[in-house]
Amino acid sequence: VDEVMEELKLAKRALGLSRKTVSPKHHEIQSVQEEKNGSKIRLSVSISAPLVVLPLTSTSSSAFVADLGQMEVTNTFLLAEKVAVGQHPSEKFISSGGAPAIVDDMTIDITSVQLFKIKDVKGFNIEELGQMVIQPIRFHGHVIRKLSDWCSVVPDISIDAELPSLEVQLGPGDYSAILSLVNSLGDGRSTTPPSVKTEGEEREVERKNEEVAISIASSGAISSDRVKLSIKFQMKEVILHLNEHGDGGNIERLKFLLSEMETEVVMKSWDLSVAASIGSAKIQDYFAQTIEENLQPFLSSGSKERKFLTATYCKNDRQCPQYGSSSPPTEQSIVADMSVVKIHLQKGSLVKLMSMGLSIMAEIKSNNQPSKQIAIQTEEGLTKRSSVVKHHLPGEREMYIEATFGGLEVTLGDEHGDILSADITGLNTTITMLEEWTVVTASMKNVMLVDADPNSCHSQVVSKMDDSLTVISTEIRMFNTNSVHDASSLDLFLSATVQRLTVFLVFKFVNRVMHYVNEVMEELKLAKKAVGLSEEKTLSNTMEIHGAQEEKNGSK
Image (cartoon, rainbow, N blue to C red; front, side, top):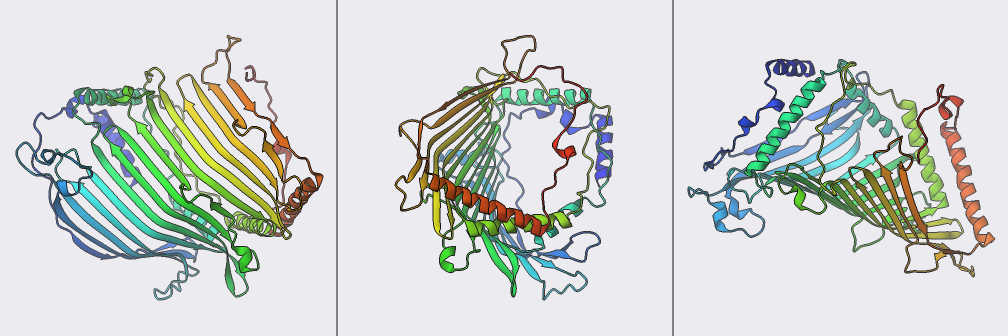
């Protein structure tokens, strides 16, 4: 199929029929609105999906078996006014000829989707599918498709989907099996590099695409508020169980739990926005010997009033007529916020956790085959792709990133109790990419280190002297252009301010912390030797000798 598609592309290019080189005249705006609605097809579909067997490799007897469950699809047709979000005048849903706007309302239900792992494909039995990797999944989807193109207050396509729960069980042997399956995706693929356009052809395509965009933008025929696609996806919870071999079978050691996850995508005529959030997160370890010791989670989000993580991404088309009206104009932006994260590092559980991680790494290393190299490089002799030169507006930001972190609370403990707790709050970072430079700012509001020994006379080991001041604030400015002939030009500018801290240096506390660290490091060395991951360093991978000196000056 790939080879046929490549030949078709070459034929279209030779005949000048590539869709990327369409002349602006093919995008003429019609002066009369279409009043008729799209085709209406009633659906009532019930499908018992097949079992899909995925061998780990072309020669392996082990395989994953995916049961795709049962799918039901039904639909009905409604007036667009009944599904519109928000208040809109009634005339917005009636065409100039008096035809009402209609939508296709489709419901999709998928049940009993699950994944198994079997050891021998030859002994495959549909009644006994072996180890369950993914518990049965139920999916519900709601799709609304607009049939009246002239109605702009309803999205062209709206998708609302829900996945109540996703639960995954992974044990010894599963990690390398998944990697083997991924590596086998390249089996039999052609190594022939795809055809690549020359520099002149690329410039011609980009020039014509820009002419089309400018023509459409200047005509004003496309509304900037029209929603082309709207997607809302919700997951109640995701649970991942990590197991180890034990007496009588696999024993659960770690459980990852993410809850209340939401994603929303809105694609308009000229811009795209994506919002995602995770309500809470927890990692529970079961390495301790008693139930009481297991009550303390290894990691948890520390605030019920604040979501664990929220993030938004926005991309604005520079050809949009309203692009320059925002202040400052921003092509792409990312804003993320994370609540307080609490981590409890009990020494015994930490050592067992690291040992489990090393065992997984050793399993992957011993069973992993070199991944297949699929040719995606361009042919030699062809120039790199060139883009149309952008004309930047005053103060325009190519990319803006802002990340806020509520704080980090870390507690260290051993068999005798807690040793210390560290509290870092008010972390904030911004990255602004401009035409001439990139600016990075970072700050930390507060830091505190507490001795957990109840008999200590100085419990606050590290604290700041003035609560009204920010402990650390920095700004880094990286310049994109630098003239080698100008002695005053810079590569990077760094500015930092650190406020005064109070430190009580109690050697009993310091020695206890060092003893904790040393014991953990010793246990880590023993665990590495046990699984065959001892450190090996050679001169070839730690040092590179350059035969010729670089002529350029050092960074300033």
